[in-house]
Length: 486
Ligand SMILES: [Zn+2]
Image (cartoon, rainbow, N blue to C red; front, side):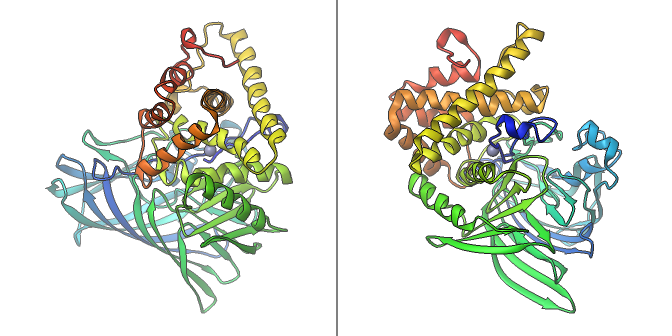
């Protein structure tokens, strides 16, 4: 999700509530529990960009230590059905939206043999004829028809832009406790998936520009149909954005190809310069290409590996803030995955702080300080109101997405208060030790899945054991240990 966008109160006025960015989620641990998968996806998007047909082959290896007798996939488009019990749409959207989404799985084979499967809500459960032990593999083939949802949420089409995110059946997260079955949440980024390999073929009418995650290896046109083939490695997800009205601007950052898709003038050079700055700060950009796609969007922005969506209604300055935030997520949240369902703060809080710190790295310290002040003001405004109605309210950052009541609360606590947590650490550590902690986190967990404790340990190591108590005070709202949040 993106995610945060920076939203200053000016942006909040554009929407009914604060928009957040989204974030993403976890990856498998190297050599540890989880799953290993290679997806081969072929999706044909029909004229109008509101319907698609998909075939998918998944080669799956059980990397957990337990034998399993079923496979569990998420069918996120089903959160966009009109009758979804756990809808992606907010209540006001449900009243006005006219085009709903969904995915109908037509058949599943395991190792070439028809397999029994059940779908319920966003879950697809496939029975295995034989148990699959640790390190054993199987191949799954499935077909599906997809209705692209209307509206401005992550998966959907509004105007000429179709955002194909969370569109394909994706394996749930597997560990030694079995499959995780996380309910959809309209708050936060309720995703946790393992790093995988993708080979994706997307076709659409040949007047449609197709932006994708990964590296585009071919673009062909036949009988009025354009087909893009893309590959991605070490990716926790794969997304595409399509529009017949896009123009494309390109630039480079080192060996990384920067693509900017928009209806008007793009900001490819800004993206390239920001990528240069963060490459120096974090280390190598984790993917071969980076595409920024402007779109009508409920949120400020949302990140996927190698591709981000940016709200086209933002001002020029706001777009830059959102781009920077989503760019940071390429390292923190995408390359280093984490559990967006239970520990959304792990990528969002650090990303929000580093997106503010970007301006100092770029030579504009006053804007950095102003971004921090905005964070503090927004959190203070939230807390004052919240305490009026709930005097005993405890603003813990470390909660799962289901424990937040509103997007506003999630934004104020996880993004804004989380940003202040890192600003406090920076004041204590100085910039060099802080950078050392961030680099260590990236190096240690690149292309893997990190927990909150993993992140805390990196800061604690770099700060000589002084980070943990401060972080706990914010994460768990323990005022006795120096909670200096507003
Ligand atoms: Zn974010």
